[in-house]
Image (cartoon, rainbow, N blue to C red; front, side):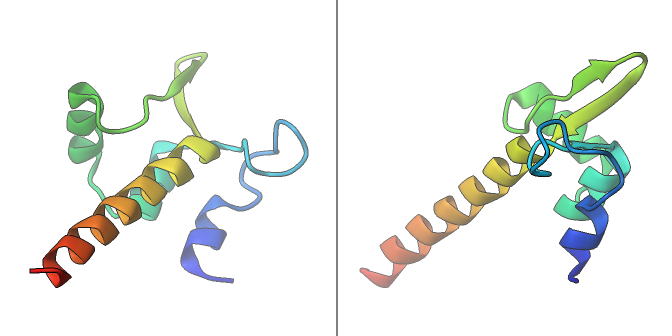
Length: 87
């Protein structure tokens, strides 16, 4: 099991049984994205990072939104690399 799977597995029960809509903590988000708390909140304020949902006094992020965010970063990287390769 890789680090991403370890961080995101079994810490919270899945909402719909498939594990994709697990609720992740800030600590898990920091481990997955390798970003600091400050960087995460700055990106949220800028509208470039998924916003959490509030449960009581706690913030939780949907795993699916974090995965989509990371996949978008990969797409953007691939577009840039493709554009640079054509030069």
